Length: 82
Image (cartoon, rainbow, N blue to C red):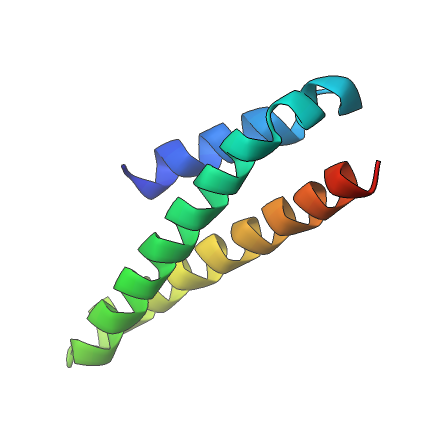
């Protein structure tokens, strides 16, 4: 699943009201796990890349995925507190 699709799914879940978010908590966890897997894959790819330009692009994608995953984790913690 592409990272754009994962990010759009995460955005969908973050936009729902609290009651619906509670119902979707397990799905949100799945998306977060997929984002983490994708992030690890990109880190491995980045480590094996020699080309500076490609390395820079991968680092930016990793940073975006990391930020979105952290945002999702924060929302999940909030859901679990409620």
